[in-house]
Image 1 (cartoon, rainbow, N blue to C red):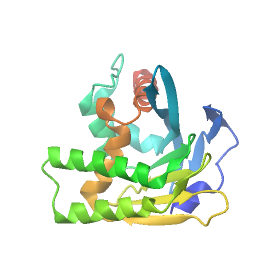
Image 2 (cartoon, helix red, strand yellow; image 1 turned 90 degrees about the horizontal axis):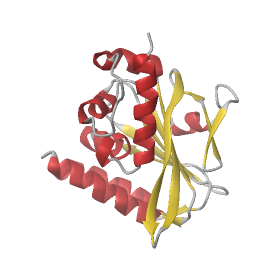
Image 3 (tube, rainbow, N blue to C red; image 1 turned 120 degrees about the vertical axis):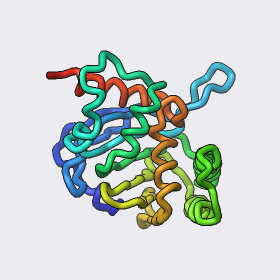
Image 4 (tube, helix red, strand yellow; image 1 turned 135 degrees about the vertical axis):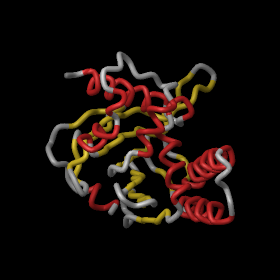
Length: 219
């Protein structure tokens, strides 16, 4: 599944995020549109260090049917938990494309993902042996990877499945994949990136809020 989304764009139009081109549309089961983008970063001694560029793709027609209760809202806010929960739970195909800007060990990324997702599961009282096993499998997948600049991590969330697939592609290596077969873990990975005020990339969720405000306020 991941390799299909890494093939070619539906058209040649792109949006640049920190100099990295993201196609405005990619081919999934349907055509998926770029609906939000941003970066993960951290400020150290007044310097902004940018780690990854992010593109969020989904079935825009399908999601709009799911978000009708927000129709006509003046401005969606990053703090609007109900909206971002609806975005995560919407039964539409979604793809998150994460492109590395600053190189790090894959194990560092895996530990951050594992810790953040576990915290969300514990807070929701949904962390048990099955979730622990699924999360450890994801962390192990990243353990041996090296995130060179330009490497791509793709998260694919099918419309009807309660699971996900993660792929990793870097120059000179075959694409690697791992399946996330636990619904709660797959959901919390989505929330890590799309979870509004608690998301790992505030620029991405701000972009999503602005994009959907424009769509939902139009006649």
